[in-house]
Image (cartoon, rainbow, N blue to C red; front, side, top):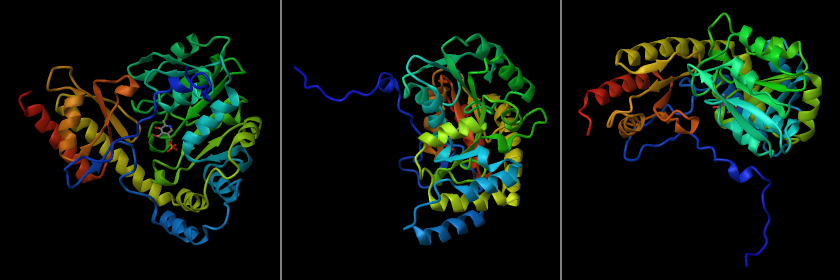
Length: 368
Ligand SMILES: Cc1ncc(COP(=O)(O)O)c(C=O)c1O
């Protein structure tokens, strides 16, 4: 007879653990990690200096409400700091929102190739994740609205989406919001908003400011290059800020992260340099990889999704192995229901050129 033992709540053991991008290639001296959408330019030197200075005071608890960071974000975006909550990465905030608004038996909608944390955060609360189809690797507002039931409590939308790189226009996001019942929370995850150069796009600030059921999440992990520090923020109506503040860890972000975050958000020049680098190389990669005969989903973020044929020796898995052997680490995205694709983060000029050259060699070789 088995000994009774503690059991996690229903749903927890249904979670497929999140597998981060690989960071090593055995036997290869120089590795280019292009698997986690990190910035090739690194953080602002001012952020590094602020981080190091904060390292002199590790004995002190951080300011649990991150007031100075929220004020700096407020200044940068013209927002009321009282409507901002900071988290240990935006992942932390996505989990907190799920915890605060989902219970056993509820449903939370995400799109089929949406960010993997959404079903994980949903299952962790005992609620059911509902994956809805996309059109051309892009969220489909009608499909999302058609999936809403009396049990729906939350809709997660990554805009732009990871790993597809596609985005909905502001008009489409507004149409989605209009179609949702007012008690359903719409979470606009705008982790890649800083890279978007499209006039019809809006990250979510306006919708949050004018409604009671929309939250926008942002991160310091991408354009600000502070992924290691785990820092994100959300802008939300006051009642949602209040709910999330009640359940978040009182010191959920650390002192050096607060200091670096303030310096990063104030270094506009560094952000602009990162954006320009991305705009240039995103277009170059899309065009050059397309010229090789591979389909690339048009992206507005800092990565591209490359589609491979299913023919033996030519698959995404084969390409992954070939590129890894050259120290080029991309992301195999089968877990996102994209078994025939690899996601490539925009890298340094050297890395980008090496990837295109390697893909050319991969396609030229006779399949084994
Ligand atoms: C769409 C999306 N949202 C959120 C995150 C989480 O970012 P972080 O927890 O580093 O802030 C990521 C990271 O890759 C992402 O792609």
